Length: 283
Image 1: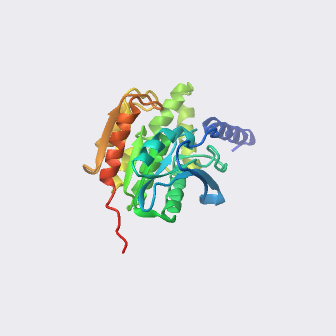
Image 2: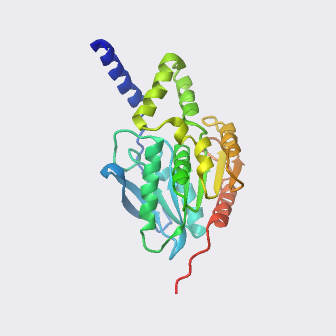
């Protein structure tokens, strides 16, 4: 390979990574009206995750909440109050290179799942937590990460996926179209390069495939007016479900905004309540 061609490829790779980097938006508020505490959670590669822990009492069921691409814990706060009022301890985290968490070399769906795994493991070690009664909620890439993590973690109690895409390649193709990048040959190379960087093939981490390997109850929630991730993708994931433990909740709203949130939170909490095993009794 000539030096000029090698340099061109290196420059292209750098451009791809910078173009796909998630924006960092730092929180500017706190969970007002809730008994929150700021926490720092170790994750892989010696990095730390920022989070808010909102305890609900001794041996309460617990939920870990993960935002989407370019998001942060603050953006998920509308979920925290209703969940806490329903008796759930809530842990909200920022993925690496998001919000107030440590920066890393790149962000990806697998790294979101790694951070979720470390946060859930940390929560299990805390006093007043009943490990069998922990569930996870994620939005968009965070939702896909919840499904990936649950496919590898058999003792999770429940998953709520909000606006997950069915396959990373489909999401990437929409991004290429938005940026007016032709699929062949440049777009095809971008998809190849991204898989090389993250160390995973898209097929292995796609929600339409990971859903088949999940043992716990799953709620797939999706907005009917979602232009970023069409609701058809929720139907595609649902069609691949392994059994009746997977439910589909369609609601008004777009990718980031949902109408009548209180009514849908009642459905979400009802699902979690039904999925959680009974509290253990200690004598």
